[in-house]
Amino acid sequence: MICLYPGLVRPILSINIGVDLPILGSVELHNTKQSIIGTIKTLHKNKNVLVAGLILFFSVVVPILKALILCLVLFIKKLPKRNQWHRFVSIISKWSMADVFVVGIMLAFLATKSDDNIDAQLHEGFYYFLAYCLLSIAGHLILTVENKKN
Image (cartoon, rainbow, N blue to C red; front, side):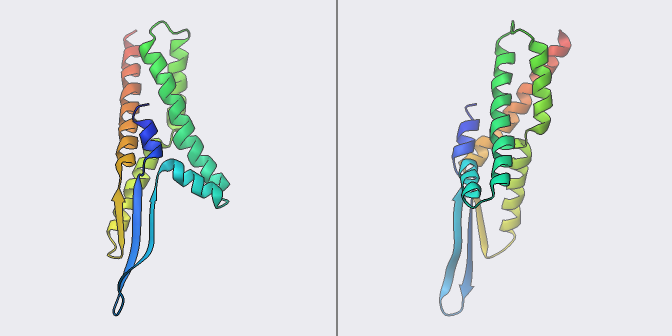
């Protein structure tokens, strides 16, 4: 949860598109820096409600729900129906698009780096979100191993 919040609200990627013109020199055509929450707001404002909703659900709601349940199951050993909560986390983990989102951002970053007129920068939000994904996977694996022992 500590990594998820800044991963959602801090900038993850900035893209600067420019062109070198013979007389004018370097001209910036587009410059944007977005966080995940900022992207959702922009999509919603631009009437892309379905896409905004999908990103909100799969990259914000499901990861938060998964993180909360994982924390409960990992730290409260006498949690009623603990095994059922673990199975629920396993099910929603398949629908969490957080890890896919990280890969998508990385691919977008690499694709824009291959063009001389486009400059892309990863920002701290990306690394926080990546850390959340890795810690979430590790927590789920720890819980799975622990449940197999019992």
